[in-house]
Length: 297
Image (cartoon, rainbow, N blue to C red):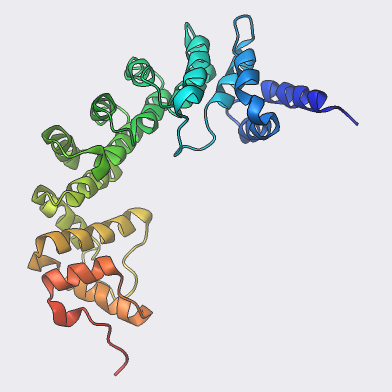
């Protein structure tokens, strides 16, 4: 039976030999993270050392990032990882190594991360620029917000969508610059970007999003005189419009949402439950008497 060291060497060799664009690469990286345990940073640092191949450094950097896109490495642990990642990134030309490095930096809380990532805001790779949105998202830092603001104007709708998404979070802040960026995206060519901007402004109860949200809600009628009796949502975007309609109706109390809310109320009653967000909208537009769940008559 092979020893633990032999098993690790075999896993490393398999990861190095796999294509970084395949699921196999990421599955092997996850297996390595588990197998290395507390020795992960030391082993990964060896893989990114000078003289190692591009593929070895790519695997090492991938190990130093992740696996969770939500929880970031902090403190001395983050500092050690960033030391190694920056070393691997210096002078890097290989696309996979750059992508893995930018992604890995996004998983670390360290004062060197954002200044380094800022330099990639005009990178020719759409994937690299999109990774910047995830790296900047959720950071209570002025430079992170500035990076997101910049990326909302990116040439790629994919990048603009995610930058607008992260900028729309109330936790990101509520400054005139953020609201202006969201307002600018209301006229974006891409519907998903527009919806993200509407969501961010609606969360902030900014009535400049009222007309765009109302227009989207009315489009759910598909040219009919009234809202259909069956489910309105035929796509994820349509579902987002419905939720935006609830929230904007609650915030604005605009009577033009009345027919939409009556249709939504009937569907909710038929299903046996009126969600709290819909209740707030109904109460704001239709009145308290329409909030109660009515049974069959």
